[in-house]
Image (cartoon, rainbow, N blue to C red; front, side, top):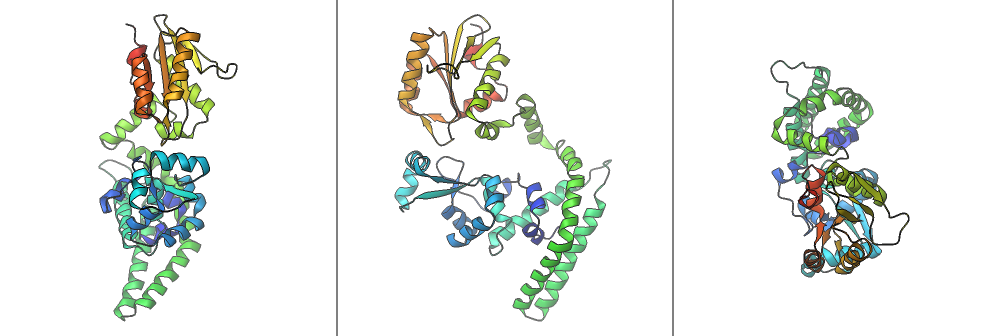
Length: 361
């Protein structure tokens, strides 16, 4: 199998296993903030049993890679909204002044595990991760084996590291053992890792095809991606507001609304899309592309209700957001016949579930 130290050196190898966030909970339970999506620097440090300073130093050295995997820093008004809506209970138990707040997704936490040297939890995650990856590459009956060179390479590498470290430990010299392991890693970084990266890129497409045929979870994932090529809520979170409006318009057309027009560029009214349903009813849609931790307030709902009913005389009114609604906004929507499409409902709608209000009565 691949030695866990190779993950410390190869960003290409780290990227190839970055989706395996399930490994985190298999090694140790990871507690999330109340939004169910993020953890703070302190929570990352507690998980890996290291100091916050260690995590901060690692973040500074690998900021670009961690950002690509979901890490973000909140400041100013964005931080104020997050603290009010998400951190209230957490901060009550652990109060501290903040001018900024670094948040990690599960994928970013896994990235930390693949970079953090001095943590037994991180070491265990790397070993577990590579064990699972090795098992996923094991050929089944009748399947061609096209990565034998890669297997031979990593087997030799693993044996070389283990033999060097074992010899030093036999001399009861732990310090020299660490020096020996670091020396081997230097050789890895200069000679073996470039070849390993190339092998991963060459056989990556074939491995994706093989993994695409495994298990019920993968089958469901393929079905969801086939229905929505843009890739789920993560893709919608990454959209601009204009792209999000176009995406919602596409969902309406998919569900039988033949003509849906975008009005946000030529109107100050509180409606982004207008059109008709399959049976001729007037459709008005408000789209709010918010961060997942934000909430649509009752004032925004009141404005939309007034415009939908008075200005457009809407038969069907949709308020669609990538976030959630406050209880007051939800109550207004129910009382005035507005369909409030929150984050979870939007995900199901995008995956193919049709909104009942768009069906013919």
